[in-house]
Image 1: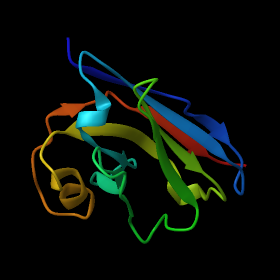
Image 2 (image 1 turned 30 degrees about the vertical axis):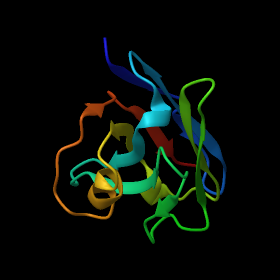
Image 3 (image 1 turned 180 degrees about the vertical axis):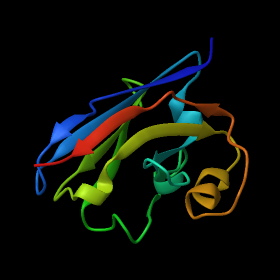
Length: 129
């Protein structure tokens, strides 16, 4: 069964840090581009960051550039999102997604509507004092 499962969400104070994990099962992450998305209450889902399966090229939206870092471990079949200097406006459900088509994930993360093959269920991040 092809599946993505996120973990690592929780309550964190403003200015704090958190690392989210996304583990793949049923397929090899090294063959896929991976992206992180988030959806805040009452808002549309937005892309945050992506990493390509081939050369590991990383892409970040301006809202998180310099604060968030995406990485992956092909041996563990996992992708991570390291989040620093968190703000209350970062509160959202964070999801990872994967697609085999080169560039498709970055395109969707950047804001162009599109379909991605595999989605996780999400993990809640709550940034609050």
